[in-house]
Image 1 (cartoon, each protein chain N blue to C red):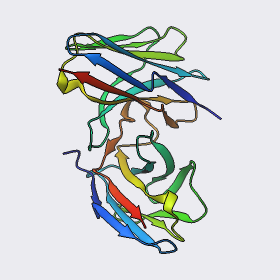
Image 2 (image 1 turned 45 degrees about the vertical axis):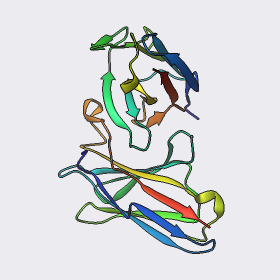
Image 3 (image 1 turned 180 degrees about the vertical axis):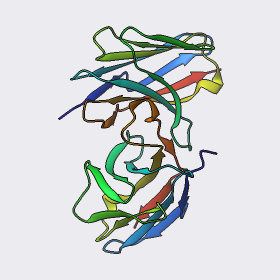
Length: 116
Length: 110
């Protein structure tokens, strides 16, 4: 158990819909990262937040957005869903984004999104 | 942009054989991390290498960081069925961004 929680575990929805994925980082971790992993694919970095502020953006579509709240939990919003958005979405947290030696990322169990 | 390439993409081995995955970056890295993802699971941190030429061992796993800090390798001696999974390297670039390689999926035949 990494200490990172994600809800829901599974989500099935239809094209055109909007969903929200939730992540609670490990206690004390300020950084939250979101990744997308399609079937048998690598980890595509989407976005990073640090203490409530956006820190880095990766290959995140305009239809996707995220935020980190004062209690440090984060939400990833996916809208106008397409079939190709079906994937595992992982959240990871790390103690800090500034100390290179503390950059270990702890991954949550993921949310499996299926778009029909 | 900054890229981290990992090869091979897939590797089938007989139990007891050795296995190696290689990671190459287009730019110098400040450090490199390795993660393992079991089938159906999430990536789990294995190790971090920081120094040029660094070598670290964890039981049957040997991790190396190249002298130029642009490449790394993970070698598993005498694979076991419990080694099955996808191994990812993740390189940290100067801007503090962590970039994951595409992963190497290891399959072990008993």
